Length: 67
Image (cartoon, rainbow, N blue to C red):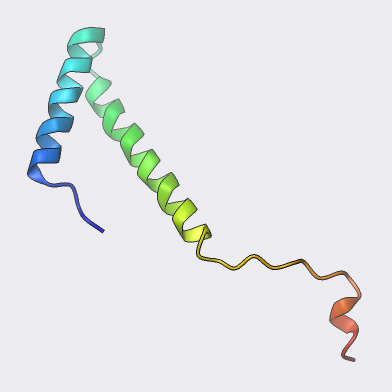
């Protein structure tokens, strides 16, 4: 997994500045980074959940069939 590099930060800071200029809301840069962070966390959750095998749930009585 790669971390964010200098060029990425320059791009994101410029994008945040442009959004701020367009909306006149000085919190837009922070919101941009928050949205990006949440998106990365969601992707990571999906990626982790995708590594588990899918199994069919057992019925109530099947766990006692060996006794």
